[in-house]
Length: 76
Image 1 (cartoon, helix red, strand yellow):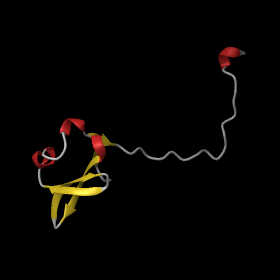
Image 2 (image 1 turned 135 degrees about the horizontal axis):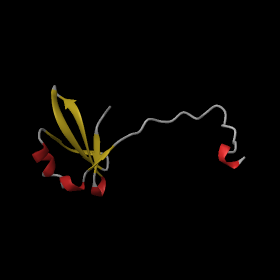
Image 3 (image 1 turned 120 degrees about the vertical axis):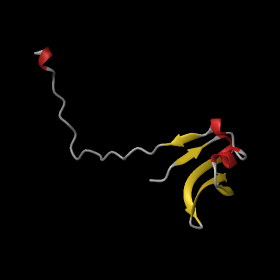
Image 4 (image 1 turned 45 degrees about the horizontal axis):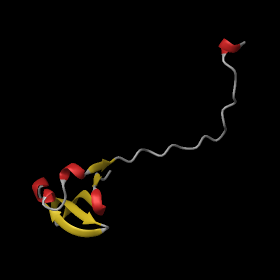
């Protein structure tokens, strides 16, 4: 799963392999700004404190049938 960070002003940072080496690709509004080989290089383009990691949660499958509503045993 791809790791991705987003920041202010449309910045996005993703880790990938480019030309046989690992880089951190910095994009702004979808346009490639730079392929950085270190976090220090990324900091030259975007404030690291502004970046938040995007965590994609698994999609929950919709239940085929709704559960029947029942009363609690406490309410008999």
